Image (cartoon, rainbow, N blue to C red; front, side, top):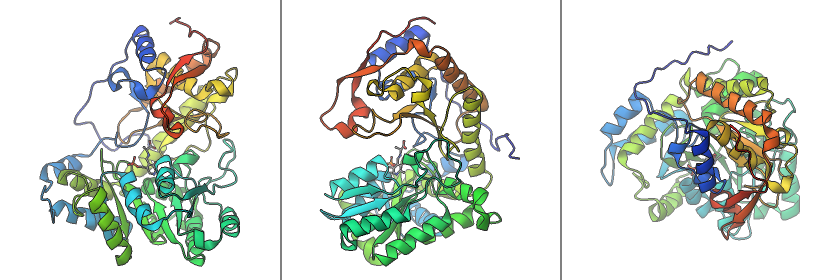
Length: 457
Ligand code: F0G
């Protein structure tokens, strides 16, 4: 049984307030019923993302103060390089301003027009960077990936058969890179087994492709492996992380996740030729290779966070807190994707608001309802964020690292229960203004209720 107690105490606090119902209604209306347009100070519990929103440790703050701001040869870079070698096992590091910078650096040199790139499931920015090269990003998710109730320990896995089918269809020469995302953010944060990573490595090797791991949440993934993959039950999270990453030729990393910083990322690899190419592209888009678009202090804090992420009890407490939110929601009668993933709980919006037609965005309506009922901000991942797909409308509640307490989680569950209770008062939404690029519409589109929302408190 896991101890619910957190192994840290607060040293610095930031006040949060719950605006009145009236203020929330006004804020949501002004935001065009899009939670991305809300001012953060109008949000009580902010579960929009776990990216860059976590709480740094005292050691990270100390590193921040000691950061070396030298343009070239910064000591902070050496600290990052050593941390990446020790924790992830890669020799060469190209620092970048965040994860998508690493994607640009890596895919920019490996992928060309007309190529095809398979991934267990592309995260939005990965998909965009592959597409930006003129290539075709193809998802090869586990067959149970989109079954919210199926009980399987590794629903984030890469479907090797789907990979081979793709090879048959497009030919291996069109596939320069194979990617595996751990944990799988686009599949409800589900983990990937080390066995699956070995299989993907063998697959990539057979077709002569470079194997890249999107390692944003590698420590969370290693914790799941320890808990669920028999071979690793006695191994430490640090050992598992190194083993899993050892099968990859390169990683792209967002430090905003499992390096527990507010900004930063990197690409890392062992092949000196790939490093040289990535470094040159890094200079073009990110900055000199010892700072990569970051202040030296950010690089220093990232080096410390990367080491902390694999040291117990941090990541176990983190993943168990997410599971706790899942349980609180389930106990409140809210249907969630199961088992819960590493960084977030995903609510089945179509089950909470069954009367809202799919083309009136039940997921986005649920996001608005959670804000109206309790000042909670989540994000829709369904028909609004992914136009033209038939993905189920899920609402993601992502937990920032080391930030909220059980009482906050209880408030979230009570808020969701209140939405369910008053579900009939929530109609659908229609888009009234959207940007030219449909794929990016959820970040800035404006919507309006198709039926006037209830103003009852
Ligand atoms: N890959 C994955 C799996 C991610 O989840 C993210 C970011 C990125 C790459 C890009 O990293 O933001 O540092 O450029 N995910 C955040 C989220 C934004 O909310 O899930 P970035």
